Picture 1 (cartoon, one colour):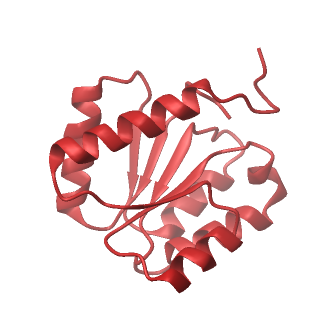
Picture 2 (cartoon, one colour; picture 1 turned 180 degrees about the vertical axis):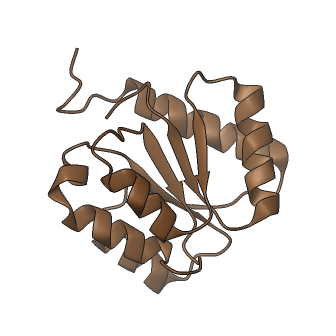
Length: 141
């Protein structure tokens, strides 16, 4: 996991993208924030040999390639898997079968999008700081 890498947000809702943008602006992390509107765009970026992002936040319901299918393809790709990129779902609702299906594809977290700006900011701060402290095989100090 490249702690200095980009924070990837796979989200097709423009309003949610704007809220994420404001949250990360206030949190003032040095990581670049990169948005993708669908899973296919994100997959193309993640399969690039030069791509080494820090973390991926993904919606589940998206056009072209859903978040679950994106995660499945990432998990099946050894080159991406070896980069040890944390992959978390952020979605508007969580049916038990969706949560089970997500964890069966080795995600590292499943979150309901908070409705308030402050709750989203607090959640993102907790998640990012957790992963900043976590060690991974490729980047042990």
